[in-house]
Length: 106
Image (cartoon, rainbow, N blue to C red):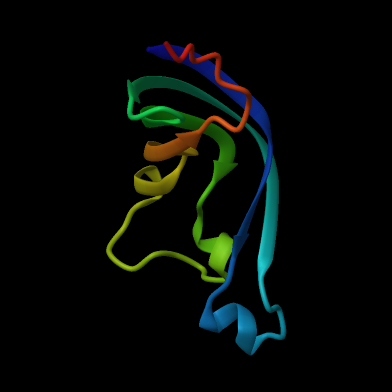
């Protein structure tokens, strides 16, 4: 098992038909993020193991109508989309050890 916290800078790029219609291929918002994660590692055979991770990412950027060149989101009120983007993440990995294995042969 493993617990970690990732932090850094990210770019959120969005595109929409209204943006492209006014000559903007995409809009870019920069911000910081922090993401606590938890991982479980399962040993496979010899050099192979597997990982399963879950986490939750907090960002500083909001997704608003202006992000996609709109005046508002139809059927939504301002409180529905004010606040930073957050998301739940799930991952699965296959790990291969390429280092030297110390296996004794009798």
